[in-house]
Image (cartoon, rainbow, N blue to C red; front, side):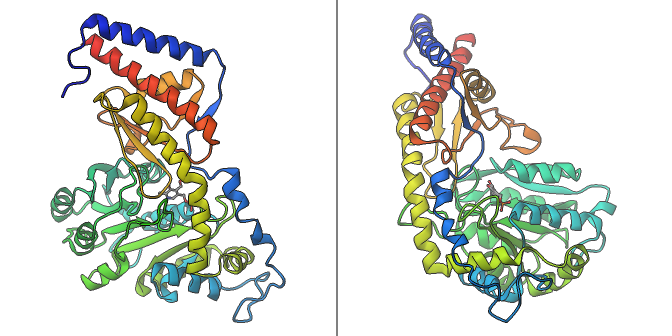
Length: 424
Ligand SMILES: Cc1ncc(COP(=O)(O)O)c(C=O)c1O
């Protein structure tokens, strides 16, 4: 069905005028609503204040004094903590500082400067390096590879994850394709969790580049919104089973479990890769913040206790996700000018508007006081080829502000669509 089928030009113009008058009345309120980044709200941050209450002493389980130097790859109980949640062995884990993104940047930098385990040459010595980028995706991933001069190839996604026929065909024939970004669970921004078949194919596919590396950013592994969470196969295990144990580096953090500014992160990979990269990291640092690691494990305890903690987060943010869906359905539903997902977890809602209308919608919203992530940001180089994807980050604003922002956004989406249709 075509948008606004059966409407005359005059009816379309009337509808646009009606929306413009609503838009102007919002604009005159001088609002300042920021929905640009997926940040926990203050109420969520307050769930973790217990972190500061459990520090009676500074001695780790194996006697290490966490105030002092030592334990390059993290304290024993922090490795055991993540090992339980992610089904890893402690030797596969490296605990970092507050940012998993920093560990990912560092991995790419090491791959370019020194090379990782199994590389013939560092990527920086090659004429061309290409990365596969499932889209829509995370802007900060794309920013890292852009900075290193990587040519990024857009891979479309469906409800099962990246288009694997395309991925397999590309990696089989081009040895300049060295890597791939993946957010396999509650993907940023589309909320998709990779199917078992996609995970197995990524683990087993034949790649022309022997040093092909998957960056498996499992940022939202335990960030469920509902009682029936999505499930994701264990990528390290699948790579091992497929005979490609060194293909993947996995990352996650407690940024949206405790505090984004002061959580703990980790990298996990095969024991062989880990032994290799630790020799590089040991030149770089004597170790990350072990006091914070100890605080985190004492507070979060184990998988079962963390699950209970994450339910408290879900109770705070679920109504926000549901408010977005309710308002978009009320204002845009059935008009064939927009589609969006209803995620089972994660931090985002991905809104697709009529082709060529995302930038205009985001600009209109900005002028009415609603700041969104820039249109295009969910694609490499900030260029959405269809100019249709908008990332909605509902967690930070209070519900009432969020409702207002989504009312305004839906007016902007419809105005942009009508401008396009009327101009055609
Ligand atoms: C997919 C993804 N990975 C990583 C991050 C950042 O993680 P960290 O705070 O551990 O650096 C984010 C934050 O929005 C994200 O969406």
